[in-house]
Amino acid sequence: MWVNIYPPQPGAYAVMPWLVLAWCVAPLLATMINPRLVERVKSGFLVSSRGA
Amino acid sequence: MDSTKPRAPIDPSAILFEGAGTWDAIAIAVAGMAPTMGMNLNPQEPAEHVGRVVALVFAASGVIVLLVAWCFARLAREHPNAGSAYGFVAAILGPRAGLVAGWTLLGTYLCFAMGSLGGVGLFAANMLTRMHIWDGASSFTLTMLAVVILAPLSIIPASRAGFVLILLEGVGVVAMVLLAVAVLWRVFEGYGPQGDPPIRDVFIPTAGVGVSSIAMGLSFGILSFAGFEQVATLGEEVKTSRFTIPRVLIGTVIGACVVFTLVAAAQTLGFGTNAAGVAQLTASTSLLADLSARYFGGWAGDAFDALAIASALGGGLASIVASSRILFALCRDLAPKSALGRVSKVSGTPRTAAVCIVVASLVGYSLMRVVFHASGSDAFFWASTIGALALLVAYLLVAASAAGTLLRSKRPRDQPSFRRWVPRRSVTPCGSTSIRRSPELMR
Image (cartoon, rainbow over all chains, first blue to last red; front, side, top):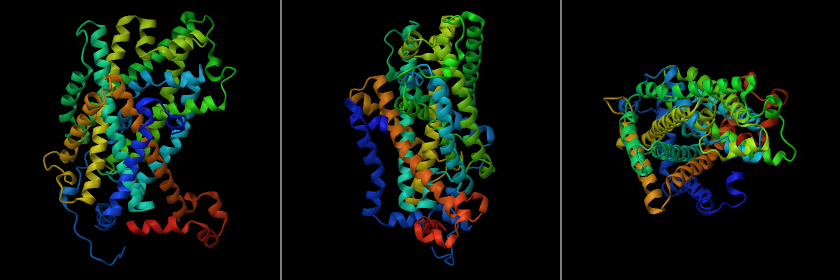
């Protein structure tokens, strides 16, 4: 991360860390907008398969 | 979660076909790194910072990556699943963190798929132009051709895809090792650029190469291993995955560390450890091809260019397979009725998710080329850089989860040494409570 973010990169490379940040934050925003997503993960396949 | 609550029966269409073996797992892990393509393009970057000690950097990077591999191996043993980091992190740090990890890793592999497909087009265009088979060959057209080749391979069972990957990557790795041994042999016989082979130079930095330069070199060295963890997405397809996948993860990194160090040493000694040799190494756009052409003639250079194309093709296939499993695992939980969360009855693979990933790769690559006017080389490096950045976030979450498993483990041998000495009650109020409570969400 240090290599790619510090110092600021030229051209398109300056935008990339922000693109990645936006991509990583997207699921958090999605769970804030739709809290049922969290419940679906909690009761998802991994849990079902453990109980089977 | 209430353990007395009756659980819904598992939908058979949500279960992947468990038919992949150990060799298929090894093939996905090795192809994920695209080692032949990597050793063609990666050593130049660390060499710019550390000079002649590239081999030392690769050896040290391997040791660091081994720690990451251990984190994946530990979690793959306890929570084998098709979502890899999604399932690992959700089980330890909670659903939100799991979603971030899964989504981030999905983005990483999608970028790697775009980069690899772009790499096929880029390398093939360069080779065809140089050999005067197709003057001014279009890397865009060749990338589209690569997509057409890979699309059917990405929807077949992992065991068959593994066979294709063994062919694509296995030949390249064996040829690369043979080349390294042959070059070292020639150098030791006195046919190298410097008469007396200065072996110790490969491990002793020149004056002026400090800790900062080594750290920069290490970051590029570590990213050369990126992709080995793609095998963790086969957690529901490999037979006895709890046993096989952790061993494949660790074994692949150790093997890659040995191969990368050997090849980097051959490249450094082959070009020369003096300033002129290092300058030639850093200026090369195709290291293996240039090295083999230098010692064994132009035909060998063309052969290694072809192997790098095959390696990029294998890397693309492995990335598509891995990202389709993560997309499938996410959709299976978040949108169970969606076709993306279902397994094909014919192939036993998440066919719809794989097609979606192929289309997304195609659209992403085309956007870079057409909308953002990227050259073939730009598209390759843009996708690789974004993927590498996102991968570091996923690694961080997986490492935190692996640390969480250690803290909550009840087996004495799995606990860090301080936990054996400090009574459990005195540790819990000091901060491990939240980490120890989160796994309950997944139980």
